[in-house]
Each structure stands twice: as C-alpha cells, then as structure tokens.
Image 1: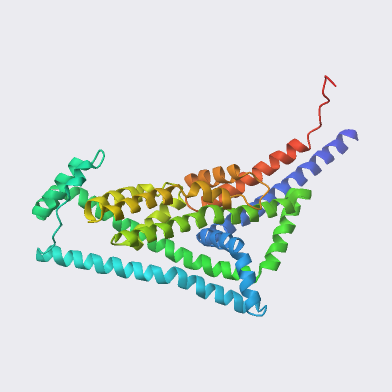
Image 2: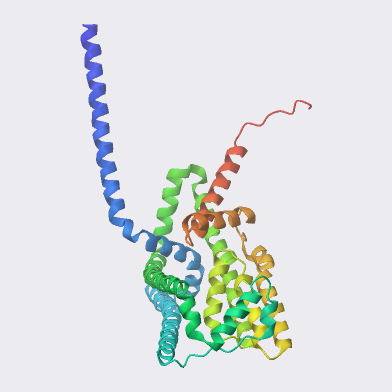
Length: 364
C-alpha cells in the first residue's frame, strides 16, 4: 500500500513538473517571437524613450504655453523637432552635392587649382615637411598627385560614401525616434505609472527610487554630454566664422561628433588652427583662433562638473564612467544605457552594503 502511494506521489510530481515545463516553454516561445517581431523597432523605440525622458520638462512647459492641450503640445513637439533635424540635414546635403558636383566638373575640365602652401607649413610638427611637399606638388601638377595617390583617394572616397550612407540611416532612425518620443510624452502619465508598477514588482521598496535614478541619470547625461558637446560645437563655429574658415558648418559638426564620443575637439581644431596660420594674412587672427581653440577644447573640464550628475544621488564619476564605457560597448546610445546601468548598479551595491549587518567594533 505504501509503495502504491509513493508511486502515485512520484507520478503526480512528474505530471506537475511536465506541466510547468510545457507552460514555461510556451511562454518562452511567445517571448522569443515577440522579441523577433519587435527587434527592428527596438533602437528607434529606445531612442524615443530616452528623448522623451530627457525632454519631458520642455514638453511640460510647451503644454503650459498651449493651455494644457496635451495632444496639440505633442504634435507641435514632433513638428518642431523634425524641422530641427531635417532643415540642417537638407542644407548640409545640398551643400555636399553642390560641392561634389563643382569638384567633379572642375576635375573633368582641368580647371581645378590648388593654391601653393605657405612656407610656415614646413614648421608643422611631424607632418610639416611631407605635407608641404605634397601640397606644393598638387599646386603645380594636380593630375600627377591624384595618379600617385589613386588608391588612397579611392579608399577615402569609399569611406566618405559609407559615412554618408550611415548618416542617412541615422537621420531616418532619428525621425522615427522623435515621432515615438512625441507619442510617449503625450502618454507620459500612463507610461510613468506602468514604469513605477514594474519597478515595484522588480525592486520592491526601492523600485521607485531606481526609476527616479534612471530618469535623473538620462537627463544628467543629456546635460553633461550632449549639451556640453553642443556648446563646444557652437563655440567652434564662432571661431571658424571669425577666422574665415570655409565649410564652418561641416567642421563644427565634426567637433560635435568628437565631443559626443568624448574625444578632445582639438583633434579638429588643432590642424585647422595650423591651416589658419599658414593661409590667413593676419597673425593676430591666427593667434586669437588658436587661443580660442584651446579654450573650446578645454571647456569641458569646467562645463561637465556644472551639468553632469546634478540632481542625481549618484557621483558624477560613476555617470561619466558609465557613459564612456557604454559608448565604447554600444555606440552613442550606450552613453545613456551605460550611465543608467552603472548608476543603478551603484545604487544596488550601496543598498546592499547599507542593509548588511553591522559588526561591533572589537575595541569598543
């Protein structure tokens, strides 16, 4: 009799285990296919979420100006943000096409000329002599230089074409992200409630605090990384305009990209300053531009402490390390993901250490 009862219990346990396994497999299969279906939209949605969290205070002010009309505020945000992205993109694209067309036309007609370099080019560190020699040869016989460096020019052209293609893809992704961000902000109350409920389920009593840290970290990175990069880019544009550098908008955009990826803008400003010294007739202008370039490049040393980490209960160093590490691991979007993850990890560790039993001091 006992053997029969034990056998029945074993069979019952096996049936329950088998039933649980089937349910888990079914849930896992649904999650897998949901992930596959949503995967193409993951990055735009993630960018939209980041943008909506970062710019929600701006949206609230806009909604206040429009008499509290939520839908109208969302529509205005989408239209204005798309205009901010599309207008410079169209102008830059038109400028690039015009420049490339003119360059091709002059090359075909044999009318493209290169001005001879100044003697001061020889004084450039490391590359001065070679740059002067190639530049001088190009000014005398451009065709011989293009023939000599044909492979390098082809590689440069392929790199530029690939860069333009990636830029076009990024612009399309940004358009979708801005539209999604507008929709998120119009439904922010429900979305915020859902985020807090989910955080309470996952993080328990500290769930809401983790959500607030995530929101504060995203806004801190926007201020401390993107805003600082924009300030440096605008300062660079002013310097380019003052020195009369052609293509100021393009160079300012490159400074913006370098600043976002946490590289010093002097990598762009330095060579241009050297060019200004060789091409500008006024030494005073060249010296002022060089000093301005050094100020722009070093401005993040005092701008970041002003903006990064403000209003977040996490040290600035944690956010900065998370942003840089995340960017290295996952690109520009890693600036936000890395900072948020490291900030949450820091908070979890401090909570865990704070909840650890206190050891009595043996000397007390």
